Amino acid sequence: MRAFTNRTARKFALLGATATAGLLLSACGTDDPMSGMDHGGTSATATATASASASGTAQAGAPGAFNDADVMFAQMMIPHHEQALEMAELADGRAEDPEVKRLVAAVKGAQDPEIAKMRAWLKGWGKPESAGHGSGSGHGMSGMMSEQDMKDLAAVKGKAFDRKFAELMIAHHEGAVAMAEDERKDGGNTAAKALADDVVRTQSEEIAALRKILDRL
Image (tube, rainbow, N blue to C red; front, side, top):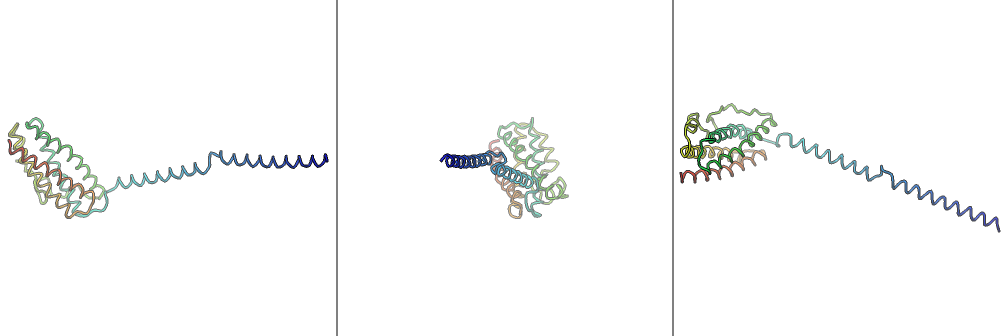
C-alpha cells in the first residue's frame, strides 16, 4: 500500500513539473520583445519611409508630361510677370489711391511666386527660361509695355500715376489673360493649365477693379 502511494505521488509530481515547464515556455514566448508585433511595426515604418521618399521624388521633379504650348506659356509668362512687378515697384512713393495700392500688393503677392514656379518647371523639363524673343513686345507677348511706357509711368505721381498705372495695367493684364487662354486651349500639362486658370480668374477680376478706378478718377 505504501509503495502504491509513493508511485502515485511521484506520478503527480512529474505531471506537475511538466505543466509548470509548459507554462514557463508559454510565458517566455509572450514576453519576447522581438515578437511579431514589433517586426510588424518595423515593416510598417519601412513602408511609410519608402512611400514618403517616393512622394518627395515626385514632388521634386517636373510636374508631369508637357508639350510645346506649356513651355511657351512659361517662357512668355515669366517676363510678362516680371514687367508687372516692375510696374508695381514704381507705385512705391507714387501711388495715392488706396485701391491702386491694394492692387499693387496683390500683383506682388501673386506674380513673384508664380515666376519661381514656372522657372522650376522649365528647369525640370530641361528647357531654357528664354524663348529668344527678348524683353520687348515680341510674338506672343501681348500687353507688354514699351520702354517709353515705363518711363512715362515713372515720371508721374499721385492721381496722375494712379490713372496711368490703371490704364497700362489693364492692357498688361489683358495680354496675360490672352496668353493664359491659349494655354488652357493648347497646353497639356496639368499644373500649367491650372496656373493659366488662376491667371484668367484673378487678372480678369483685377481688370474689372482697375476699370472702376478709372471711372472715378
